[in-house]
Structures are given as structure tokens and as C-alpha cells.
Amino acid sequence: MTRAWEKAEPDRMDLTSMIDVVFLLIVFFVLVSEMAQAELEHIQLPEATESVPDRPESRRRLILNVSAGGDIVCRKRVLSEAELAREIRLAADLQRDRANPTLSNLPVLVRGDRRAEYAAVQRILQACAKSGVWQIELAAVAPPAK
Image (cartoon, rainbow, N blue to C red; front, side):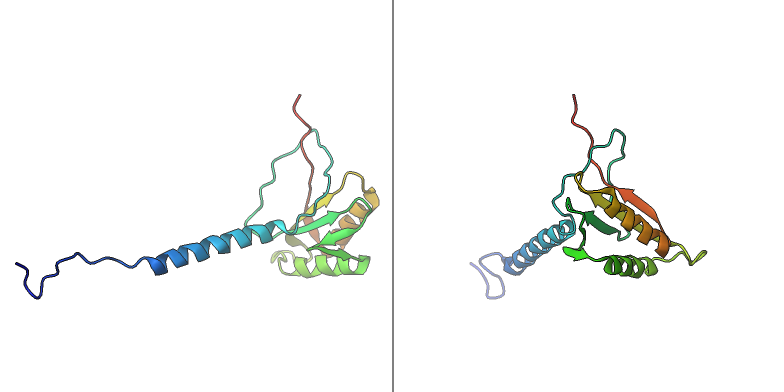
């Protein structure tokens, strides 16, 4: 015999809202991971006999892609010489070295297509030098294993 203050069935937790939150988090992380890859253009990287694996740092780095035709692409936008210099200068200003304000701690990743002429990469290097950027990485792939 059950009394009025006792319940016949145990309480059940309603997990609907928790499941909704989990699905929203999954969608969020999928979108963020896709946006992180959006800066990487589909290009054929050159092979390098010696390299170190890419390790994206916690700081935000500027990724510049050089297409086979020599176009410089940043964030899915083709940049002119003036736009390239402006983009690098603005990003460099956000990470100026406090001890030496003429230098910037901005890391720049240059991803050049293997068919591109070196002149486009040289324009990037010159724009970085004018803005005080010294941390420049060149992307390449390891040769296939024999």
C-alpha cells in the first residue's frame, strides 16, 4: 500500500534539452573545423627532401596561397600588390613586438603551387620584409616513400 506522499514510479529525467545542446555543439564544431580549412586553396605543393610537419600554432597565422597562374590568394580573395601589402601590414600590426616595434611576431604561411613562378612568392617575401614580418613558413609535401 502506497501513501499519498510516496510515488509509485521513480522520477525520470527529461534529457531532451541536454540532447539538443549536444547536437548544437556537434554542429558548431563541424562548422568551425570547415571554416579553419577554408583558407587552404586546392593547390599542388612542391616536394621537399627535408621538412618538419606542420603544427598550427595557438596564435593566428596569415595564410597566403600562390596559384599556378601566379595569383596571390588570401581568405578566398585574389589580392593585388597594394592589397597584399595592406593585408600583411594590418595583420602584422596586431602582433607587433613590444621590445622592437619595427618587427612583428606574425607567422605567415606561404603555400605556393609547384607550377607557379617564384616571382609571386618573392612579392610576398618583400611585402613581409617591409612590414617587419620575419616568421615565414613555406609549405611543401614530403616525397612519396620508396
